[in-house]
Length: 447
Ligand SMILES: Cc1cc2nc3c(=O)[nH]c(=O)nc-3n(C[C@H](O)[C@H](O)[C@H](O)COP(=O)(O)OP(=O)(O)OC[C@H]3O[C@@H](n4cnc5c(N)ncnc54)[C@H](O)[C@@H]3O)c2cc1C
Image 1 (cartoon, rainbow, N blue to C red):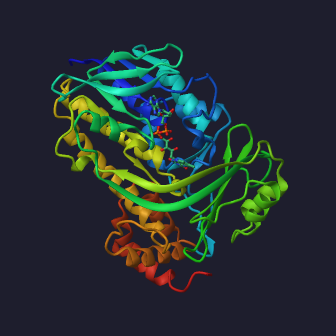
Image 2: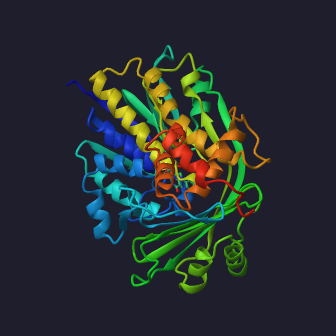
């Protein structure tokens, strides 16, 4: 199999690391360019402060990570992360009741986002053909004289003054939701991708607490979600490595959790179920209260562009950044990296024309989590954006699914399969699920 000579990945966060892992099998050399200096420890860097917030990994994303890094689960367990059946350890209050626990057959991984990235970075940087160039940002794309092909990147100097060019056969942009791709494309004479934007004005606050391994709650992942639009607060407490709980709370459309001690506690007590407040009241805090504001889910439709330069692709949050409440970003990035790997394998070193099939396949992947996330957000009248037809009817049905899942393990499982991007939303319309939903999901939610 012939290989590309050199690929450059812009951004060394999770999407960039996954892209680099996949590219390493198809290129002689891969270079990750990361603007922040990187230390060999779990950290939240200036370019990705959000990683301190509560992060859950969907089961489908976890499975892709295990394919890419076969020792991941063992290393996580060894480091004290809890790896358990997601359905058995679920403690999820939704639509006025707790979802029925059941054996799901898929794993929940109790790990903080910085720790997960640090482990993955260790595997990726251990690849023999991989180089990390940190502390240097990419300032621009470098193109051929006819502008048809991206042939490298121009580095912005931090340590060294002046610009420097790094040539590459393929540049993969994984520089996150703040990517400069739109500007870079314009500079080369290309139209930027059309965007879908749905405002959510979500604010988060998060804090680490000590977790007693003997506490009966210790294996549970706790989640409390609102009956929207009357309620607008969400919260979770996930067990993470180091015998800690990571507590995260958030609220839509300005109903943001305060970051002072008393306000944080009061917000926890205001939730419709007591579980998160109990952790906050009973466990010793181990960190300051951090916060993060998230204005809008943003999707960039590269698949709709008729002209695009050769030698350049985009991946991860730079393509689509979802309202984080639904925990989809890492999984979406992993699925996109898998598409990239499959296309490179099919093409055996030829990348001309790869952008069209890549962006089309990625669009199909992104369609479902996007539909799930914005569909839920449209329960709030303040959400502005293109509302897919039937949103109201679908949301009414999903509310019934939530209520049925208080009692019915099969419905609970069917919902988890969709939420974890293992099955399409249409699977909730299967007759054997629908009749259970209609039989057990009637009635009104508490609010
Ligand atoms: C508050 C919050 C909570 C979230 N919770 C979840 C969750 O529960 N589950 C989940 O799956 N996902 C969650 N996400 C999303 C998840 O964090 C991202 O999908 C994931 O981090 C992958 O992002 P990324 O690598 O594409 O981009 P980022 O993590 O934003 O990283 C981009 C990287 O590119 C670097 N960079 C930027 N510009 C340049 C440049 N010009 N040159 C060089 N480097 C550059 C930055 O320094 C940074 O390191 C959450 C997001 C937020 C905001």
